[in-house]
Amino acid sequence: MAKFEPTEERPDADDYRAYFDSNCLRVWHLHGKPLTVRIVDVTAITGEMFTNGKGQIVRQPKLTLKGRDGVLPLPLLLNKTNAKTIARLYGKAPRGWIGHLITLYCTTTERNGETVDCIRIRPEEPKAERRANQAAIAPAVTERGSEPSDADDSPGMSALLPGDESEPPFGALESDAVIQ
Image (cartoon, rainbow, N blue to C red):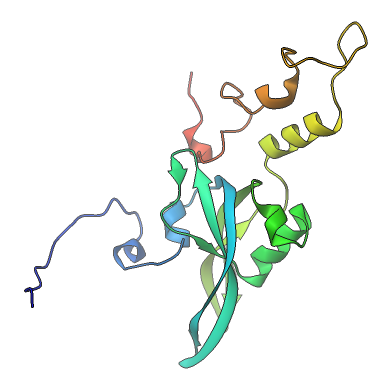
């Protein structure tokens, strides 16, 4: 059997909890800043959760998310509050959530009489998602009154391209805004 060799590292962390192992996205991974991401996949995960020292088998939705730099290394496990928020935005069918943007943010909640940090999902579509939906619902009419061609420069997809400083692109932290 191979001998265990301990390793030492200095994580780039602003919260001591980041020094511990984690198998899912936690509030400290957001560094206190909102993060807009795209839902890539929705599955269910079953595991054991301990509350007040008592173990219980639980099943919950697991989201695979994609940011600006690709798929996030950790999934987001949804609690009922966050699942309901996404359902209000994009419908009750989890397969219908795939491809949509959500914005995660840090906040606190009461749990077992204690205030704890948590991740929540903003209860409104990110601006880029709203612009894409508006472009799909209301097709632009060209000056001649005909339907737009593929070469048309309508606001549809161009609204999602970099250069719009009103909201950072998905996967960007809100503090990543370009300073000119």
